[in-house]
Image (cartoon, rainbow, N blue to C red; front, side, top):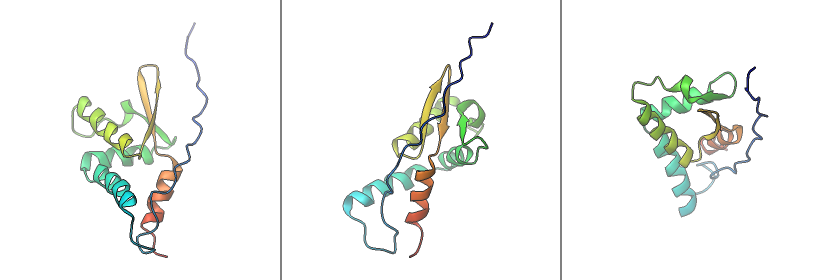
Length: 118
């Protein structure tokens, strides 16, 4: 008998756009701080690969066990995933011994809006 439990899907979190498009107006100090944190997190090639692996995963979320082959040790992968979460780019959920990561659609939309010319 299996004790596997199917969890309900995560409810999408609403993430407010970090800032207006770059061409709309100058950033406030708070907007610049928030945006810089996001770009700093993505400025590392390993973090960018991990973010891309999660964002492009067919199910919309990825188990850490499926995205950790980025050429660094598992503790380093965990460190980079933590930095992406701290920057607000990823959310996670523990399921048994594994952690599943997802990029909320609203995060991608906010990033796209930031770089869109109006």
